[in-house]
Amino acid sequence: MSILELLNTTTEISLEGSFFAQVQAIKEKETKGGKPYLEWTLADSTGSLTLKVWNNHPQWQATAEIQAESILHFHGHWTQNQYGVDGKSWKFRFLTEPETAEFLAGDPATREKQEGDYAEILTMLAEVADPRLKSLSDLFIAQFGPRFLRTAAAKKNHHARRGGLVEHVAQMMRSAKVLAGVYPYLNLDLLLVGILFHDSGKLWENSYPETGFNQLHTLHGEMLGHIPLGMELVNKLWRDLDHTPWKELSPSSEDVRLHLLHLIASHHGQLEFGSPTLPRTPEAFILHYIDNIDAKLEMVKDAYQRAQELAPNILERQFPLPANLVTPLPSFEKPASEDLDLI
Image 1 (cartoon, rainbow, N blue to C red):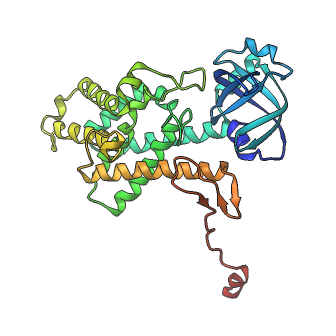
Image 2 (image 1 turned 90 degrees about the horizontal axis):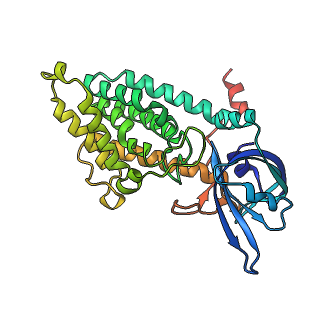
């Protein structure tokens, strides 16, 4: 099973199962009684969890061999409560080489979805008519495609997994195409490419190594953040393009570049949320709201899968959502008898 499946299925009732995971972090702690224990942060391609290793664990001595980035096989009986996932009678071992290769390839369902999303992104970018924006996108994919494929959309809360940025960008692009049909005055070329680049700075803020599921920490990501990094990336790629054939195009290339940079700069929508400027064009407003909608609905989806039930149809609040969730109303289904009456 994957970590996501474990989080979604474990309850107060013990579930027996196995999973592979990479140890992201190891913390040495003590109980109130002064007994040592370890707190392991485990991750795979679908998510992460925290597992406590108590000092009476049969393999307690073997934990000294485990270092961050170790990849392990876990088997045992698992439960989940308000404190997280807990294991009973569980054990661990290092993976064989074939198992390691299988693990690093990622969860099959997640990998299939991300590959499909990436292919759809490329298809939508191929439809961009403005040669400046098309060339800029092509250059980004050529230089940074593999890194894009293994970058998360966030450190936590939404799409916080290897490849999550591809899922987020694809869904935003699909939404943009639908909204452009409702609001035909939108510049769809600019909007699609703005979506591609709006979180591109996260390639240095939330990316993963080729051989693991532990998000990288870089000085550029820590000291600048993804919005300035995304703007700098666009400017660098823009300088690398041959602008000679585009001198007579309208709107001017400088205006195209400026409007694209504005989409990156304003996409958080508010100054207090990290945007250096506020949305000032239709495309900037649409991009901000699409970004927010997709992030929020991803959080809601995850919350429905993980939250404990407080009362019938009421689930406990999951941060950063503002309130307890309520089970959604199912879609109407016409009774079978009515179908028969129409025949």
